[in-house]
Length: 112
Length: 111
View (tube, rainbow over the protein chains, first blue to last red):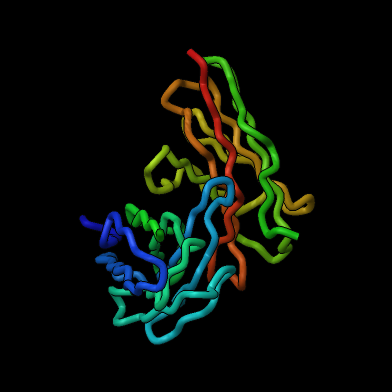
């Protein structure tokens, strides 16, 4: 099983450029999440989608937008990238009732 | 106040010893508690989940939960070099719709 698939794995952007991080899950999960991880900061929630058609802000939403395209896919968009958005981004999903979170392999983003 | 606190610095333990990790949380309504292990450059992987007060054992790992004190811990018995990783405490929040993570504790097992 593929589980949670994130693309791309690596990306380098220049300040002001835009890009979309893609995430897809094949486990029929209702809820999907985007986290960022910075050294010494743990995982911080950017946005989440508790079910298809809904999205909510997490701890650090500024500078990001999300789209729950369908039940499988949840994308994260950076409209105007900033160096402060240099990070590792993880997508995760979970089923309707039960934890735990299942993580993708991450996207390492560098903004210069 | 942070939702989940892991305050201990890096932990070095000799091979075969017990590693002890602690975590506190702020939301008394939290219902689900997890420990994830993360190797450098990899994604977090679940190693323990606990939902009720007391101890839960799985192989060399024991999770302990005390809801009255809002405290979760993880014990790693007979530590092995392969246990060297960062351990993340995670607690359900926001009406059980999301997980809040602590900053993590690095464990180094010395052969």
